[in-house]
Image (cartoon, rainbow, N blue to C red; front, side, top):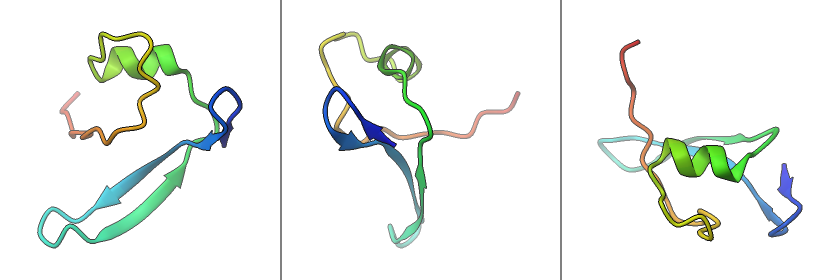
Length: 60
């Protein structure tokens, strides 16, 4: 998906922990900046989240 506000692609990239090789790239079909900021603990509401953020597997 193309983020209309920032005119950029939003996706999740998956890398190998051993080799750091790119394993997959998942295009997001939608993106709610406020929800992502909350989920990743980003306290600056003006941060468009262009940096890399680690996604951890959690047991639920």
